[in-house]
Length: 127
Image (cartoon, rainbow, N blue to C red):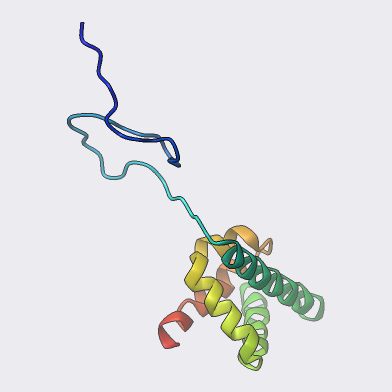
């Protein structure tokens, strides 16, 4: 019986979902997503997410959020605040470019984040 040796140097590898060393693999997607951000990018992403979360929480204190329409009003007010603050808008767009929507979803603990992110999704292309 011959032993198969791995021809890959995996000493510093990161895996999401495992490593497959096979002659033939039939699958639509293998593995997962790995996000390696520079420390300053992580901090910018975390800062922008914290600002979004704080803004949404602040607005939830002033506006009801029982219905879908009320939730949209809160998100619209958040968008107005961000639009009127070019520095914050630039940080939000930068965070979207660096981490994407999924990273911000993970960092912001607020039920309105999906509505908010759907609204700002087009900002990346507009800038």
